[in-house]
Length: 253
Image (cartoon, rainbow, N blue to C red; front, side):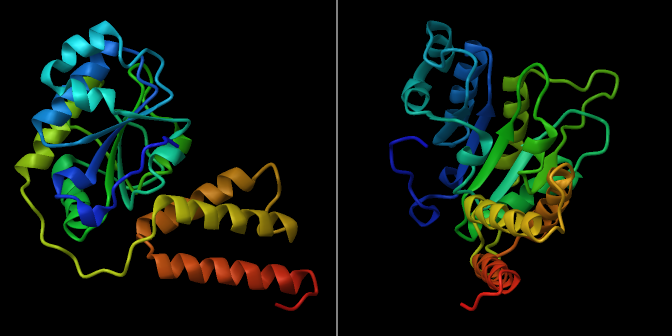
């Protein structure tokens, strides 16, 4: 995690509660262009997961133009899970045509879902994959929704910065959403911690086997993310796991 403290959703205007995440970007021109696009559309935070280039290279600085301060404060993360740990709604992008592991939609379908969360005080993330092969299945499973830009099926792949431009324009064009009366949402980090704890127990009691645990937990993870579980529900899950662990070991709380 970066050393700088991140502001909570309550301190932010709607656009500022949305963060853009680039996973392993390889081109400094793209990184600089995305920083400029963030500034164009009122996004104040850019996060970079293991960039494969120098994000502050001369080419990136040149493309950022007046968004250089935003580029310079872009935080670096070791993996996607860390980059979205404080986010409640996560939309990942994919240009692939095969079935995806979580719900897929077009910008008009999914961005209102993201905006509704932001209007209710949640932090949201838009995640973009590598220029050459996008996001892995494991990374897509960490999102609540997958967004697909309706390009021509004969050539669906877009330049990274162009894809960011399309989605940020769609987000801005959609206008503000009405706040939803929802329970306090669970962050991605708290949900992931609960799932790690549950997996350990399920392996211990033999419900999961080491060679199939990853695939079966992926299904459970996708189910809970689709359900948009609240923080109290995650606390309930962790309490259940703790009680079952004590019982399986013949212990009492």
